[in-house]
Amino acid sequence: SQTIHQWPATLVQPVGSPLSLECTVEGTSNPNLYWYRQAAGRGLQLLFYSVGIGQISSEVPQNLSASRPQDRQFILSSKKLLLSDSGFYLCAWSVGEGNTIYFGEGSWLTVV
Amino acid sequence: AQSVTQPDIHITVSEGASLELRCNYSYGATPYLFWYVQSPGQGLQLLLKYFSGDTLVQGIKGFEAEFKRSQSSFNLRKPSVHWSDAAEYFCAVSGGGADGLTFGKGTHLIIQP
Image 1: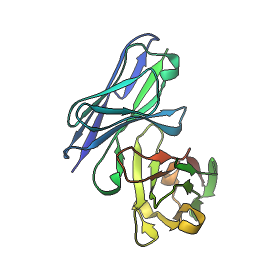
Image 2: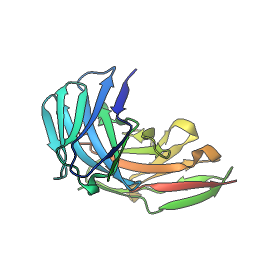
Image 3: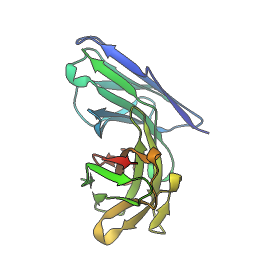
């Protein structure tokens, strides 16, 4: 069966510091991969999605970037964090008809 | 552009009572529709989905949802709620492409003893 791992689970970072959140999917090949952000416990905003290695689509211009160095690995990064980057970040994957999306457990980021 | 409206931000239901969470969508073609549940501090778990066929779909944990094209709705129902159903519920729509789902803002379900 397929599983998705996302880490770290919790992160407290100072303003201006870098960020790296990692996500890997097991048990499937060539999945679509996603990064969503959920701010203040309300709503989900799609940040990035990827249909293959090195292919990244950005939905919202912002202080973040994403990379897909391997088929089942998706990384969310920032060079300099802002206070507004605080939130709950969710990695997800999909494959097959309808591209049903399955989520990881999420990463809490607090920028102080 | 597609959109999802969940008109109820909070709903309070007594344990054992029936539940209906509303979801209206806007999409130009036949949509793919989803309901997810999120417990505090957790990721989202898929409850059920509608792609085509029978407009009444069954999901996990005793939930069901009915697709009504004429009303652009996909309401979630459960005949008898349990305290463990207290959570945030999200409705979502997509066209089936790789560009992800569009989510509603969620409905917070509170269960009264």
